[in-house]
Length: 193
Image (cartoon, rainbow, N blue to C red; front, side, top):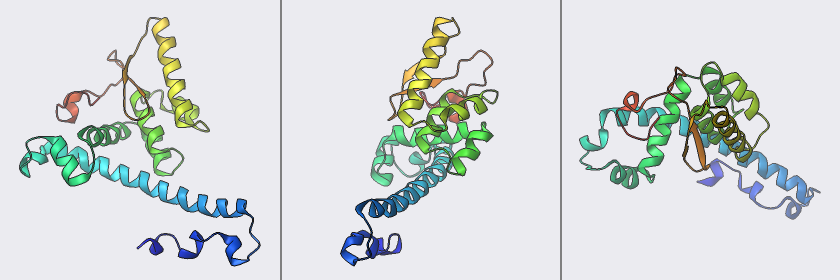
């Protein structure tokens, strides 16, 4: 099964084949496969997010006989309800941010970076946030967002900061005309903004 994705010969260290590769060359080859698979995983998350939005809007878990979303998500998808909701929320956010959506689709942004940016960018600021995200790790981008939230708080234009997904922090856009997504636009689930 794995041979369809990664040729078996690649999993054997090149030195064993006498090709004259150094261990560094082996790492570069494996890195290429890892990055390619990670990119495919990110694209799958994008598709999962779009499907999750439709499913959550219909309350599909009830139609399938599940009382709680968490039961459905865990049993059928191997995900938590929160992760499924997060996929849907990021997908919804990307719809309103075409530059970030394009950078994600082209592989310039990871899913984690896109998730963070969707929480803070607006159509007016998305290019600035995209510029800040390029060349930064997810951790560095999260720190940049926290720093921006702290600065805004000090200036009296605070945005709401909440504990978020895997990355630790998500800054949500305020409601003062910044184009924030409300929970009602995602089927009324609290916490999905």
